[in-house]
Image 1 (cartoon, rainbow, N blue to C red):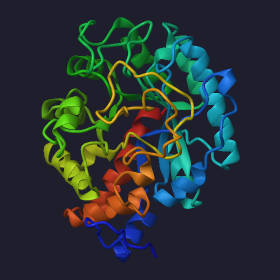
Image 2 (cartoon, one colour; image 1 turned 90 degrees about the vertical axis):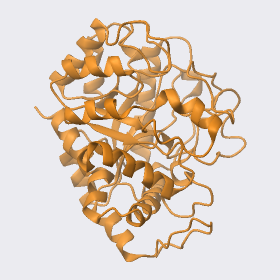
Image 3 (cartoon, rainbow, N blue to C red; image 1 turned 180 degrees about the vertical axis):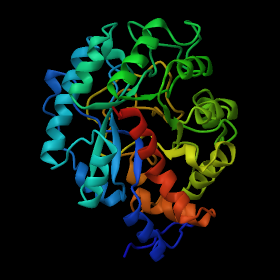
Length: 374
């Protein structure tokens, strides 16, 4: 049985309902960064205990992502080396990529953690549409069109940058159609409202915004709220995605405790319904990369970290992880795995077990299935 956390927000997660829901449902984090080497000098890089951290978290699966726009140079080469680095880590952890919902169900039945391969930002395409199919053949099933910086051949307007393209570009349109043809889930995180609206007119399959929050849920830190405000979505944009059959993932930013996080989930459910909400933490399940990186265009947190990727400058692993960076350390004094404390907080916020199962992973399984089906 899991020991209860020490802090004042402690909920008694020895409650057998928590363990029961975690065991019976499929918990999926739809946006989790796993830092791996992206260049030859960095490779092979440190080994990560992906299996151990996943089992501790209670999650059955993660959408395992990385970004290629934090370093200058050839994004395509970094993308290929990132996939090779992830191949190595999956192999040493005894894990496989899940290409379909059936793969996820099978891994869950065998009590084996699994991953859906994702990438954040289509910078690696560089205008080459055929690379979408190449990525598909390498196991990519979750594509974030945009990230903090514009790709060399842009796909659409990023929500933290000044609008330049009038929403979705012609190349962005072509990429969405190719993802629909192949069976790759489209992620519209980082897209502004105009880009989102245009993308929903193009796609023939549901989409996800994997990691964000409502712009009404600003937390208790005014400086953080001011910085994060452009990364949140309006109720109208959330309804736009839900009405097209898609999902919105709630991240852990702007939530000081698991109960705050559960309340942010509740706020979104109240707007778009329980069938259109999922979990997308925007955290790192394993340790941060030791490589130095520069600040992306979206700008850092007031504490020097960045909400959607590695901290700027220096070596992020040297001083120990900050609270909120790691999935299993998402909140101060967290002593139990992520999904356990979230399930407990959702029960205490009034969610029924079946609703937790939907938000925890069932909704993603449905939309992922629609996206990848032939």
